Image (cartoon, rainbow, N blue to C red; front, side, top):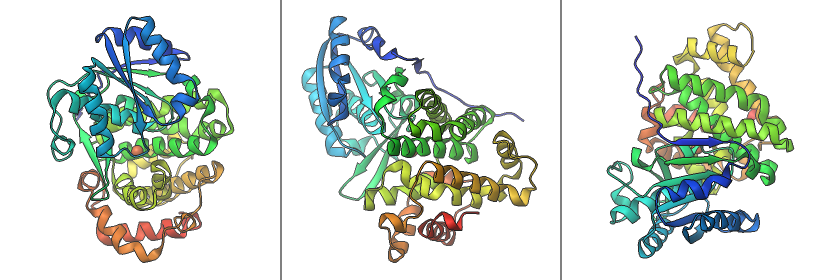
Length: 387
Ligand SMILES: [Fe+2]
């Protein structure tokens, strides 16, 4: 029996030089735009000037908030929203990786509705109208341009906190593969692994459906075949991984993420490990762990990856090994120990991971503290223990 609920109302414009359309798109929302971006790439690359010029050419006035750090804090979002309110802007444009786009979402919410950010993050949900958001991603990872999520850092409690709500889905996503030209190989790998995590987690999620599966499987296939070349600098391959990251974003918009993201947050908050890299350490082991819950879906995934006939007892391990090989090829560090995480932290890691209830609730297998500990231990030992 089919059961599908799917809502992605974002206008997607995906082609080289699609960024040229930012002025036209923004002018349909008003006369004053706030550009939200990070501290260096936007300016250094010349894109900030370019976007400002394109907006001004359409008669818009432009305000810039270029203070977004990786894993943006509540304070950053509150500062940006004050600027948006003081300047009375009509549209918010997020230019950057997930951090800039998520900050743009938070700023649009606070500027429109007032209050403080804790009024709008989980377990609350954003409802009603917020300022329109245009998202321009510059990495091939987060898919935030097509999701109803924004993730922030609560520095006081040392936690990742998620804002959820259909009103924060961007009105327009401009995906211009040319912006990926200068993405360094390591960031291509890390953000590509974030996209792969999204796609696989969406596929495994209890909330998956045939439509999200379609998006997830195509995303997984594209990432497997293109991430290595993308890391070597091929623009064609980067373009395909970029497309895959958007598909994965559409999939998680429907399904949420599972234990991989829930377990990765500790690594980012306590060790400053890049979000995509944190997921990469955990993904192979989480796949192997969950495989017995979904034997027929795992067989279909193996099929998509061209792995040939495998018995239900081997398929999880085989896919896990394939992920490990891909991680080897794109130079993902081998173990959590290698990046400074210690076995002494295991109790804290397990406790933190179990507190991300939203992610764990989507997991196809019920997660126990022992299971989480075992997966962290495997990741600490590294890919030698893969499959
Ligand atoms: Fe992610």
